[in-house]
Length: 493
Image 1 (tube, rainbow, N blue to C red):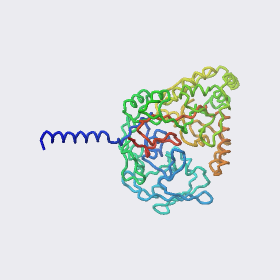
Image 2: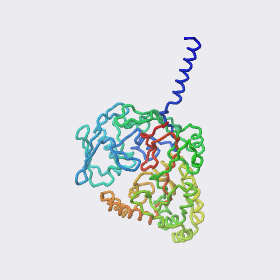
Image 3: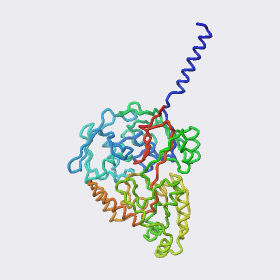
Image 4: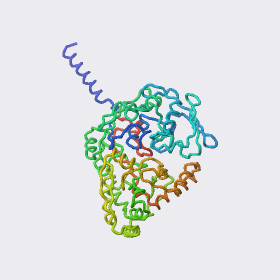
């Protein structure tokens, strides 16, 4: 062959190879998220930001919750429930390993729940699992959990991030180097920048489409917008609604608008004066113009709520009319409570757009009835310490994203300090009821008590507004549980 032709052939082959490589399907996804998690162990922290990264990705539970909110098998292949509803026997998948190569079996399940129930447990929702009275290893692939009472949502609770299975060999280090059984293994955490996960090739379940996923921490909306437009990230699960217009109608992006379990509330310290006075709380409820808050903070995407329950839940009842917007009624109630000239208070705001914007609007609405609010912006770690842990606050704004978390109001030590024995007894009855019609009746009664007591200012249900590269599929449109699940995400042609 002529040397020139040979050289041309080699060049053509190289060009073809390079073109093929350039056209190859990407296998990595880079996801922008607003908040950096304080740690990476969902069994030892309450922050949603933890589950966004690791839930169903790094860690798995006996059951898992799908994008419709239904319970599916997880590490448990199947289960049986005794006739009295008190004994659950789980058959576990065989051949499962943790990411460090150690094997998974029933002893790991026992260790996990013993750890949750221990006296020194730091699990954010230990109360969900307190009804467990015994944990028995029948054989390496069979575990039995006995309860002291029926729990209507027990299988759902086993699918929460709080109950993912951890190993005794690695549990103590999961906050910084999480090791689970999920389809993705932890690789690195560049503090202040990103967390990187890679597909775990020995994964026991269906193989995933991605080889790598990076969660990039971007708290600023403008920076997130620029990162999406520049292709520095491939999507985000919850984008600021005020900037969605940039991407709507752009064929390079897919805007997914769905529902969440995020009840956004003006959370109130019920144990601190003057908020321990019902008339003061009622006055604040009358001062809230929900629609103005929704329009300003969510650009109309939020759904008004009158109690801490998601409108898409079958147990939901519309209680937004309990304390309609009425500034004159609010002033009268403040006078009856002994505050004819109002009072001053602080409003601590975490670093999320819906909170900071809502805070400014509410400050204006409260000023109209004489309540003067000092807005204090805090970082997420400070919010968790000051507000959630130490209860050092007057008011705050936050979305509670846990599903069916109305039971938090039955805990007088929970950060907003509501202590109502009647309500506590009602939740105990609800938790022990399996009949769906009766559960709905009790749930409506519980919502009504909280609305009447104006425990918090109930504002709106947060929408999930994702912006994704149009070539990506498999993202959850709705968010029935905390997490950003990667298992079905894939690139298309």
